[in-house]
Length: 260
Image (cartoon, rainbow, N blue to C red; front, side):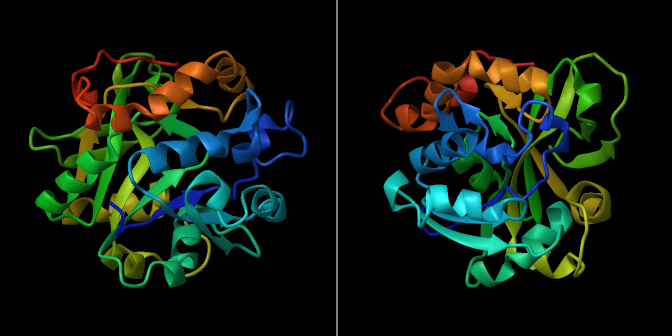
């Protein structure tokens, strides 16, 4: 794990949170007294991932001023700054200069938290021999996120658009393992992972790994308010893999906790 990197997508405009955070990037939204981004960094560091690339855009300097080179948080941070919005896929392509020499790397959204086992994700990814592995989880309001359909062998068969479906279903949590080869398949300029890249990868094989644990997306005011009530729970969940390595109950055997 120490030899890989994680790219955190923290450059979004956060338009749905403007009513409560008119001039703050979503990853800098305070959860308790600390920015949400600090929770994500804490999780990665707890699982042995200490080389981070922050893909910034909107109010990039504010993020860089707060987190610097990462040494205060026990990690090293590099910045891939967009001059104009590139979308989720374009942002990763733009970060390619920071990913030389890596066979694979993690990617994570900067506005959601999943109690994921990153080591397990990487192991499954390497065994499956695919270009992309994603963490999925089961939620009841799957329609808000869109649904991931999988086969018995764990390969993804389809990415379904958002609907009004409130039943229990698998969703993409925004945590991925990328093969370095995948960078060459992302077009230059603005592009979306969900719309432009992932569907085109299905014939090549995309692996889903289901995670059981806490999931929350702070992208809308209601869930951002919910996160404020869960600060201690969130930070405990972010440390779970570290505790597991000390001999506690494995993450995959713990009862699921849902924040939605």
